[in-house]
Length: 353
Image (cartoon, rainbow, N blue to C red; front, side, top):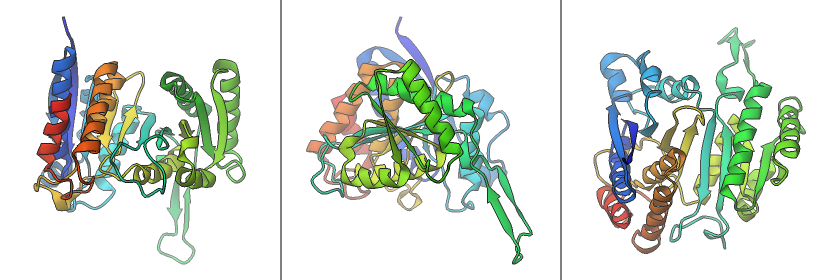
């Protein structure tokens, strides 16, 4: 009997549903070719539901979603909803409640895709960022006193426990082993200024590496230096690991070096539970309904999902199909300039799978 996976689909806002349809199209082609089955359930979480009902996310959402094998997300962000309401109320809430403590972001330049970095190509831009996804400064520890006065004070603290740091580092070391490219893991921090938090990260990094992963080379980079080397010498990197804030910043820089948001995909991972995969470019509401948005990031997110589910060959096949399409078919990664419609790009990748 073939394997069967239950997938929750959150199309979300703007062009999210459009790119998700294309990801599902490619996933179905992979499933048919590699002998497994994908069962989809759609959820309407997003801006339209919030406007209609006043409810950002039902209290039962996390308990419902954790019953699935994985989650495929389109995009969250609605032009008629104040920024932050949906992002915090859906994305951050699900990440925390489902304990998706790893954000996994491949930075991979596909053939035929333009990069703003001179004299760099797919051989040089191919690394992965492991971002701690559940702690740090994003957890909301802090507050404001005397708001609106000249004496107003705002505090937001970067807080990490050894438990949070250790489980993230363990995942990163294991990922570097699995990837098997250079078997190098670089810790990105700021030990010269954030002398408490990144001291904890660095000590745990070195202790764990020496004791449990002696075959993995360990490097350390200050975050500002990392940004410089991501532009100047991206080929130095294999796998990078860092905290929530720094990870958020450097992965957006990485996305631009790999050709922009139209090709960048990411995963919010709970290695022991349900994970969620998404294109990172946002909802792009101005392109909604025009059939011109680039679906490749969503398709790559689907490939990441299959890899995490253990369907490694199917995931590789989708990646190879995307590479063939970018190298030989598409004129640009930009919406409306691809040389094909959203639907046609999905068809091209699916045919090659």
